[in-house]
Image 1 (cartoon, helix red, strand yellow):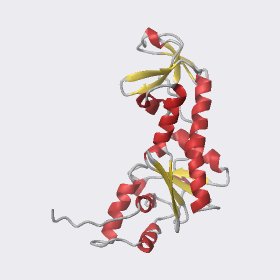
Image 2 (cartoon, rainbow, N blue to C red; image 1 turned 120 degrees about the horizontal axis):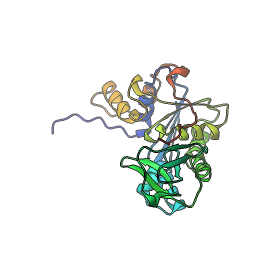
Image 3 (tube, rainbow, N blue to C red; image 1 turned 30 degrees about the horizontal axis):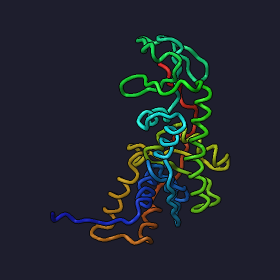
Image 4 (cartoon, rainbow, N blue to C red; image 1 turned 180 degrees about the horizontal axis):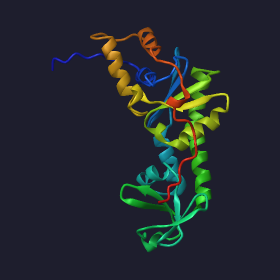
Length: 249
């Protein structure tokens, strides 16, 4: 087709280059790209790619609740509410509110999660508090555990972690990783190029690397030099872990 192509062997390296365009980030931060299939942990001089990320959490949720993966995909994301009656819901903290539009009578007693088509019932086997406890524990063990193992291999002793990738948009996940790593490690969420959010680290990194090395295939040492092109860390540029807002409404 006559289009020049620059081949990059490491998606993880591209994620790091893109993530380091977050305003205020220094090159000593460890970038963690949490996608659907893998957790990629990338430091200045080392990389570790581990299987088990968003899709594994979906599969674990589906298996535990005996529901479809499509329902589990929505259920895993955020807080649920319990349909006390067709027009009264209770959130995971015991707060109740009335709905403007009633749900189906078949939903009474079920946990509901927000979906594009409205409230999605997904189980009647657990209370809101039980579901919250299971969901947060699953995120700590599946995602937080993988992040911790990757850091132990690629960057032991790190003090700063920057999360990117689609799964990084989950506030509960940021909290889970923070709890798993402990108080000595600061965890934040990337904002690629200061305006693109956390999702586009790989795409932006690929474009940036291709622009710097036109017509050639970058070697590992060139990728490492590209890795070190970021700024320095400021707290206001990072989304820090916090309690997810209630899903009722």
